[in-house]
Length: 178
Image (cartoon, rainbow, N blue to C red; front, side, top):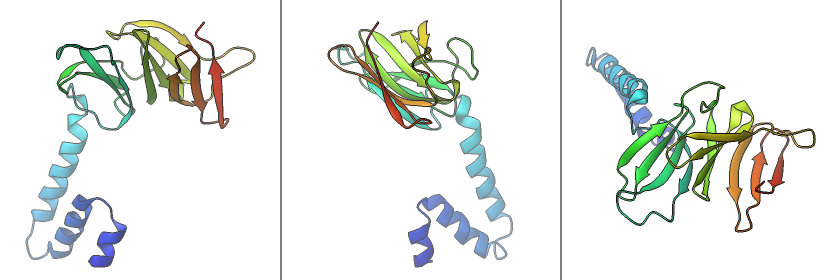
C-alpha cells in the first residue's frame, strides 16, 4: 500500500482501493462508499456558490466594504462565474452552458478591469465582457488579422492593453483596449 499511496494522489481513492480489497469481509460497505462519493461529487454541481472545477480568479481591489463584490471565479465544468464578497461569502453567479451571449463553453481565465469582467470562453473561441453584476456587454473573437482559437487566459496592464493566451495556436495576442 505504501507504493500505491505514492502513485495515487487523492486520498479518497486510496480509501476506496483499500475498502474494495476487504469488501468480501464487509459486504456492501464498498458500494455504499462509492455511491456516496459519486453522489456527492455529481449532484452538487447545481448548488449555487459551489464550484466543480475552478479555473480563473479575478479580484476587485476597489471593493472596500465587506459586502462589496470582491472575487470572481470561473467554473469550467458548470460553465458559470461565481461571485464572492471580501469575506468569501457567496453573492451570486451568472452564465450557463451554451454558445449564446452570456453563455459559456469551458470558461477559463478571467480579468477585472475598469469595472468590467473579461472572461476567456475557451471552447467558444472568444472573450466575453460583462459588467460587475454579470450583465453581458460585448465580446471579441477575432477579426481578419487575429482569430482566437481556444483562449485560456486574459489579463490587462496599466495602459489598457489586453493579453490573451491562445492555446491552440500557442501564442499571446496583444490588443489595445478599443
